[in-house]
Length: 97
Image 1: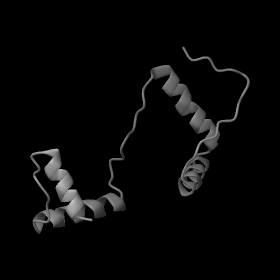
Image 2: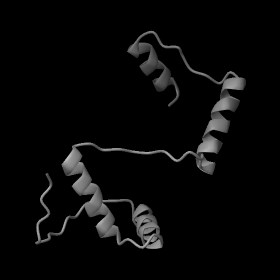
Image 3: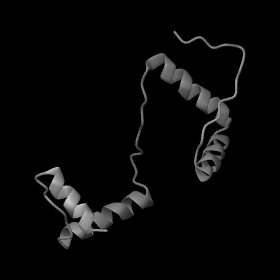
Image 4: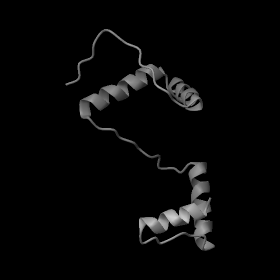
């Protein structure tokens, strides 16, 4: 059982500036202060001991672009490996420098 205390404290952590702006904007758009949203996530984390991530059923334009690039690389044979040992992998990575 999670006990919610009546006193509050400040928690500081580093986050990408653009991500913070986007998160505040998104939270505001649904009518929830970002601090309330973060508190809810922490309460759930403490109660369940789990971290869950969900993926949107729709692909983002960025994900579509990445997949298209990967498919093009595969079609053109722009592949690396397979590597049978970690040494082979490291040699290949060093050759890319």
